Amino acid sequence: MVNLTRVSKSYFGQVRVLDEISLELKKGDFLYVVGGSGAGKSSLLRLLATEEAATSGSLSLFGYDLNTISPTTLRSIRRLLGYVPQDVRLIPDLSVADNVALSLSLAGRRVLSTTSRSHIDELLERLGLAAKRHKPASALSGGEAQRVAVARALIRQPELIVADEPTGAQDRDFTWSLMDLFLKANLNGATVVVATHDREIVRRVRKRCAVLKAGRLAIEEALCYY
Image (tube, rainbow, N blue to C red; front, side, top):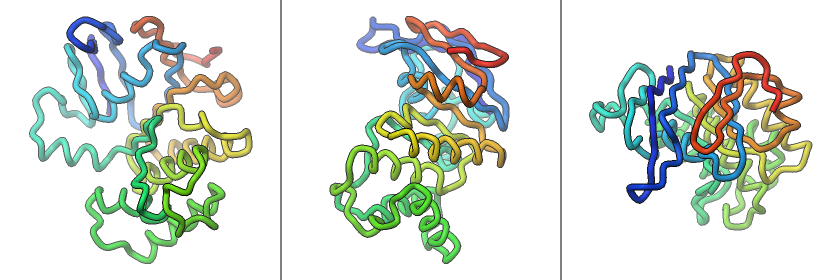
């Protein structure tokens, strides 16, 4: 599913934020990426989300080496991904529901079925956004916008979910609502990678951890005691 072999990432030709990282994830794995500010968490997730390319090393998704694949294959891979970036990137003039529906359109579903529309409504209801489904994204608070970004990533039922600090702007109740959604997707077979600084999440929902420090990676194969 995900395979990194001695992957490094540098910016401006000299600042190395990831240093020869190797990592393998199988279908249905759940991994936390933890570490301090500047450790390289967001850089690693951007690589997994195919937003950036590694400076060196090999990164494969779904059995395809990203260094050698065609643009057509890359587009197909992206349709299998659900990405929650820290900068949520909603389209401000579109409604909440349309921002979520756009994810399905980008995944190749040009016409939304009744089932898809119902799924959007159910997801927004669960995330406390039903009353704002017709509001423009520009009218949302930071926490609400973050929840829409999660809904946008999950609506297409992706095979790989990459979420960068997805609960950072949430109170406790919505934090656990979001984590429940990620865990449900994982139970349904999705591979999930969550970068977080929230120690309570990691302690209460015990999964494998990738601990990043100064660009180097250490894996806790058992429970994460971050």
